[in-house]
Image (tube, rainbow, N blue to C red; front, side):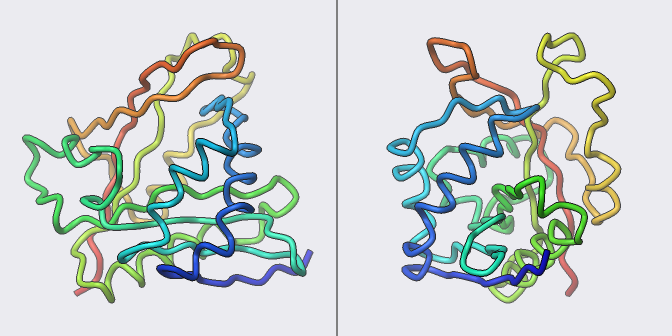
Length: 196
């Protein structure tokens, strides 16, 4: 599979929001997110990526988007994730939030995930941010939907230079597959200092 990466910033991201919404719904249905998403919610959530210093890095097979990664200043995110850093030594104004990376299974194993991180980090550094950060949902080891042999992505994130921030836990709500209502989930933040 031959993939090309394209970067969209500000108002230009509007042209890929629908494709990004569909990808998020499809990819996040899998473990560990188990997200039961819908397009109306996605359109509202992703509207923030059409303004400010946000970006979308998208992977295409021909004209078909098969993966995407987003980022924005943490303080511009609609959900108040910056409160996760209360009591830490990090100033939220210095943090660029690497929000999501979604990639269809057929496009994995080609280094695209690494390119997503590199593109967002370069964007954050050019915009004057000191750190790049992201968060990942944490599920209990006993969760009934946990796949057999599931391995956490911690080694991958450490390989990319990120470390978990002790005590920095964000909270987001969504409806899991099979549930009738949203529930709040904890998300562990990871951080990387950008080169000076």
